[in-house]
Length: 256
Image (cartoon, rainbow, N blue to C red; front, side, top):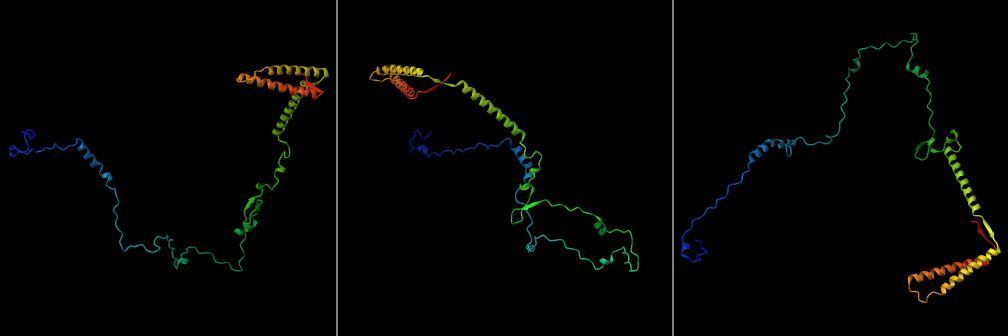
């Protein structure tokens, strides 16, 4: 029986209880283990050389000496004492003073004397620094080589065409201006016409002034303000025109 139904101090607690052994489940072993073991054995030899190579340590007797790594020239073979005696062909004897000289034999010295070499003409250069820096004189701009060029000093064809086009455009512009002047020619306004125009301007000014005087004293809307401003501008322009016609007696107007 469990201890929850009886108090802690009970006779039944003196009865020894059987120890229950906890059985662990079997360890998990993958079913792919044999394949993995076989694959690791097959690829094990590929990594056998991993790590530092095991080299043989140098002997203490073979230490590095001075000038041991410098490049050395090959040793020249020493000539033997009997080297001059190894010639198999015997040279001819020196001719005596009484022997006749050989005729018709040409030597290299005779060929050099007879050959005529044309001296190379040096290219003209100029020196521009105290260090002796040289440059070709042809590319310096000091040689007038373009003076000898064919067609030097003549106006190029494209410039002639451009000048001709500009001349035609100028003539066309002058013609249009002349026509406009002829169309807009001005004629003299007679004194009667001037007085008639002046009376018409004053009459129109009186009409606008009468309308301006009839405006209300309180102008509180936008339409009233715009109408008042329009009347003031029109009256001001009429006053300027009237002053112009009264000041000048001679007036010209265009034909159209």
